[in-house]
Image 1 (cartoon, one colour):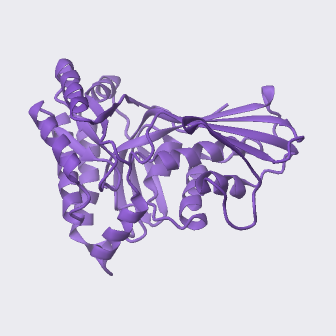
Image 2 (image 1 turned 120 degrees about the vertical axis):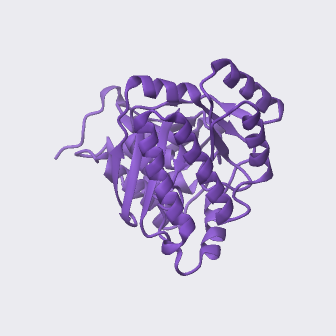
Image 3 (image 1 turned 90 degrees about the vertical axis):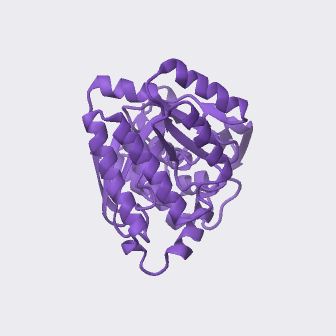
Length: 343
């Protein structure tokens, strides 16, 4: 097959981030099997590749727009230069085109917000690079390659849910039969439920990034040799199913309770997973009658939290103002019906 012709010599890709991962921690190798509910949202990670005739010294120019940082990169047989995640994805895709590629990466999501941003970067970048090759990878194939980059090429602790959520988009119930094999079931709800959920959801960043791989190591040590049978992980699997059922029914109070219960189990997994800043944010949310809160991702001393309001729009705005007054950063989010998009 011949390589695909690229109109205007430019490729665009966008992939959503992930919030409200009920059942997170059960999508890991040490859990063995799992059930996870999560929601894909905007702000997206955006990747744009511009092709030019190969006249530059370096094959790739990587521009990290958020940081105002651009540098030249040539894939090496071993090791990476400045940004291993990006460089590993480029190395993995092994593009044979006789072009120089300028790769621009941008996202409004703050780094280390525990919303699967690194997975979205990998998904969007692999999807964009795939447009330079014959054929086209499926969403599942892109997710698997993105997961491979983090776990095999970089040696990081990483579950499977973030890559799947970013590749598929929407609201999903993920069942992992045996790590890393999983099925993805979209949660199909009426527009009225979708719009109500979107209007109630808030994403709040506590102001400091987290390192999920380091947190994974602490929890793994605590779980011990029989982690797959640990009752705390089993409780999370059950809560993912409860969240799925509640949203199907449009039962927001029940859905919010599943969020709160999952955060309680995170506390039980390790005392460091729900830090003092998260506890402070929960108390603020309670004072504005929030019905649910979920520490996103692994948790720890940084990252973000998803808050589910009671449906009162003015009260939600007042809560966001109060949170900002306490030094928290609110991030506008919209539910993403689409996963990876390439054009």
